[in-house]
Length: 174
Image (tube, rainbow, N blue to C red):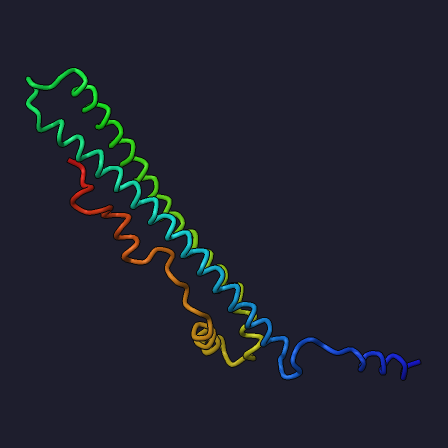
């Protein structure tokens, strides 16, 4: 009976290449998951930037229209002109407030993802120590920090600058 069990176990053929170890597969899966997370973060960053650009364009358009109305002397403005001027000021104010919320969201996401990265590193560190053996905690930490990919920033410096500075001079508040 033992011989039959051994024979059936030997007959099982794995899909994996015989030179691939479980650790190799786990490592590759980790790299793929990390890449997926980086791509999701980049997609989110691009969406924030796209929303910011649209808000800036709308603010700029409204400010141009407001500038035309402001350039008309008060004595020559119609009641409709004065009403439209007030409406434009309110719309611009609302869009600027929306943009401020967007910037706050970006900062919140950046901090949340930084914390996620720390938690993931803390979770993975013992696993890498087990794989690498016990060479000493400090030495293992150096090896782990070199072997873990560095997290990509959620918002690149230029992206954050874009969100903070909006579209520069054309979008500054009058």
